[in-house]
Image (cartoon, rainbow, N blue to C red; front, side):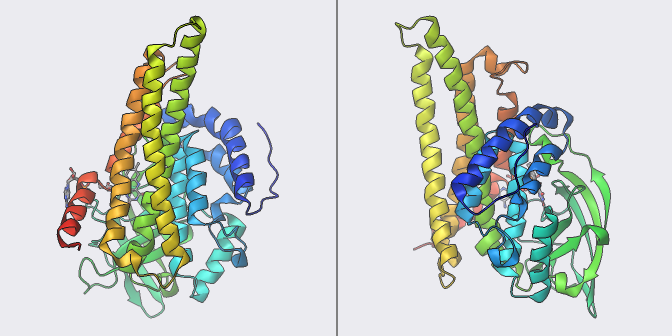
Length: 392
Ligand SMILES: Cc1cc2nc3c(=O)[nH]c(=O)nc-3n(C[C@@H](O)[C@H](O)[C@H](O)COP(=O)(O)OP(=O)(O)OC[C@H]3O[C@@H](n4cnc5c(N)ncnc54)[C@H](O)[C@@H]3O)c2cc1C
């Protein structure tokens, strides 16, 4: 195993180079066992923490690297080329960091927490999904109960990725017992103050290393741990767009690796008979075109969101056009990743279909099918359909 210095800086090319080295030497060699055993990618996260990459989105003034959304998407894309579960955990964690950084740093508690995140390289999970609500993240049944300067909160959460390994969980809930289902708050629950009782194991088709078990979550803490803005704002400006940008980027990494495996297969074929271009080369050119479209759509939407983030006065995040663009990014990327891996499988042939081959694509295909379910595509399409009718 290689060792990496912790002498990091906010220089994206250098960060990506280090990340590729971690990917090659640590993430990829463990990807198969992470998937087979449905275990947390411990080795990968030890390496990422050593580089202080878990706090890469925390501003420099709080000790972080001050990387941008665009930078974080590129990191997710790189990790996705080596192990989609590792990349997904990294991406989901960064979404939670972004909720805190973009919405809570005005509050003294969260200023201190940001410094702690950097120092201890906390891993933060998310509990939005709830029994009885399903994937509608803008509704909650559970409510936070505030009594003086303390809160209590209980949630039936059917899926909390890496919940058992996290140092903290950001939990959505109604802001009090009288609030409507959509009048939500987001609460930071610390590991020391939470009891997680397992509801469901995680033995899934793909993203097996995310360890997305279900739990009954019972917690308490200081009232200052409730994020100081309504969840509706956090969702519109950060949770929704940030999630779809980082998820799509890691799916792009997964698709890129599938095409790379297909290219390896075509090269081997071409070497056998150098005078003839194999038919699979045409298929490779075709799938590379699809990858080009996927990458273009992601880069364009990430740039659009970055412009919104760079201009705090921008109202664009409140508009239907922006929300539709983010939904389209998710819908398109989650479909293209399956398409691309399927096309790569055709090129690799039996070598891609086998589990014991260097060109195997089984894990890629299983992971790719999870993309459409992470906030169900039909749900997103339904929201876009409503907005299409009223958008001018
Ligand atoms: C790898 C992975 C990791 C995850 N990690 C987390 C996590 O860390 N934290 C977390 O909170 N959740 C997490 N989730 C769960 C979350 O992404 C899912 O949205 C949630 O589990 C709901 O799943 P569902 O598809 O059963 O429910 P629903 O979204 O309720 O969908 C069920 C069915 O109903 C249909 N449907 C329901 N409502 C509508 C509607 N309004 N319009 C159209 N169709 C509708 C859907 O099409 C679908 O067929 C994760 C999921 C995956 C795959």
